[in-house]
Image 1: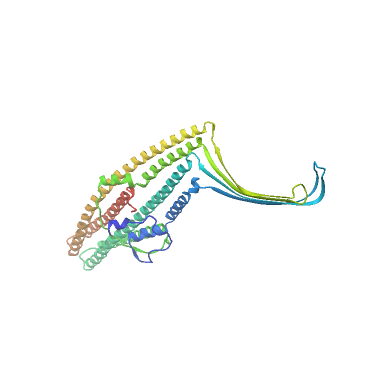
Image 2: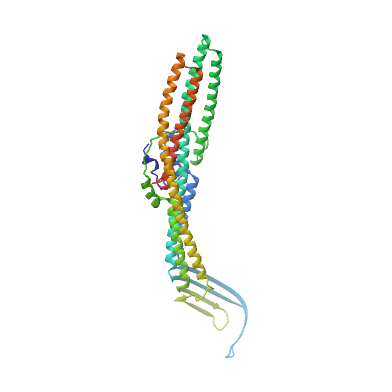
Length: 437
């Protein structure tokens, strides 16, 4: 399993649901990550939030496009009419019908708003980028959990394998003790003690296999699989790419998602201040409409009145005084922007601290792994020799038992050391923004 291929994932890969591996199949870390990208609820939610931010980033939301309204109305009436005109004409009728039809199309377009629309458009673009960053952060967190869960399964499998090797030795020890007891060269005590130790090892194996099932269930939950879904993993570990601290320091400044998010937050306040500044500048609207009106009466001076046509004009407004609200808002936005700068610097120091600690842990874990790999070779050879000596009667059952226990501890430490190295590596890649490439 090559290092680059483990983490080389497209940000949104394929978001349709469905399983990517079948029952009892052996899966790789790459397949596990791909399934998480497809199925994990948190990632799907983050994807939808990103799409919402993209939808909001439009010319219409920025106020750059006109507004067009259509209105239409009709009124029917039946009235009693009594009218006297200056020329002596008198109209006196009952049940006079009348009809009024009106329709119009209205266009309002803000052609200047103190440049607010341009600041708003840039602000919405930043919100869209922040939405993508939020999704990336969620994916990074989810993939970190998936990778940890995957290697937790690998760790449990390696511990079980060590226990099973020790179990074979315990069975052999019991057979030898029983033979010695049968021919009278040893007491029944060694047989009983061998049986006790074998049962203890059986108990440990049962517990360890339960821990393995639980680890698989946790990974299934992350992948949106049924918790009882059974699978095997490819737990071969290729260790390890050597990272350089100076190179990682440079990466965090340009790639760390939390740091980039905080930096974009500073830009948001810049555009909010420009929007606020526009409130003291003039605003010019273009107004145009097309109107149609038809009024018909059965009595009266005007029996039919119909008109239609286009009208257009400009409206300019300027706020002279708004109760010092502009000044108050400006001061508050300046303070908020300063806080966002402080927050950026605070996150920067925390990220640098996390990188320093993670890198030191990574270096320590590499050194410990090398020692534990040596210890495993020594312990395995020692256990083999001890078993041969026990067969020949050179060593006692107690001595073999102690060496077995030492071997089991070494296996446990080696599995933990491998796990710790991969987790340290994952944390480094996450801090540097390289867990997704």
